[in-house]
Amino acid sequence: MVDSKVVEAREESNGIRVIFEGAAKESLVYDKVLVSVGRKPNSTGFGLEKTKAVVNERGFIDVDSQRRTNEPSIFAIGDVVGEPMLAHKASHEGRVAAEVIAGHKVAFEPGAIPAVIFTDPEIAWCGLTETQAKERGQDVAIAKFPWGASGRALSIERTDGLTKLVIDPKSERVLGVGIVGAGAGDMISEGTLAIEMGATATDVKLTIHPHPTLSETIMEAAEVFYGQSTHVYRPRKKETP
Image 1 (cartoon, helix red, strand yellow):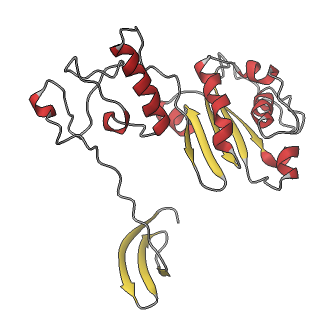
Image 2: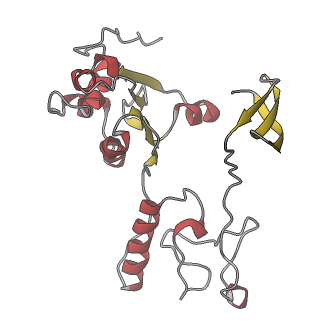
Image 3: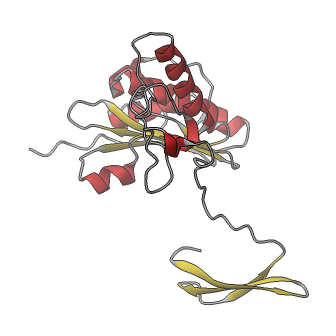
């Protein structure tokens, strides 16, 4: 229910009655209600106040690109240093911190960090999203490939998917990738690599993908950008002078 807000939830004999306001002006009875209230950094109780390490107003520990706090001998990684709160991000931060401690010249400066919502179908994205581009006033081109045109998706009866590329219309670099569909979390790594390597839509288009696979929807999305997709007819929009 969009444009709606929960204003009350009360227990009844047959379940939990939830009352909404906004677009959904009604009350419904549910078996279970899941309440998500966010996460709070566990940054207290370690004696950090006795060091030069800084804990900001939200409770996160401030670190530099090497994951070092304001106390040179103390490093911090993971959820406690802020978004995105993802295990794979924390693992890479840990490796950077360990290498810095070992005397190597490294920094945590990822071009993109992939995120996955493990629903069915899965939702995965990395880099710049279309919404973020609009908020920044950044001009982008969007290339979409529907999985209904994918032979592999048809064969496994999972056409409820979409692959989207967010592209800089001038440089044609891939700025972001979004995928919805079965196994999207396994596919998003290619998009992350494309962003890290500064790949263009042409690079993705000319990378030969195995057929029939779901991964080739990334290639075909790049082909859509140029109006050259084999399975979707969508002429490329003409550039405005």
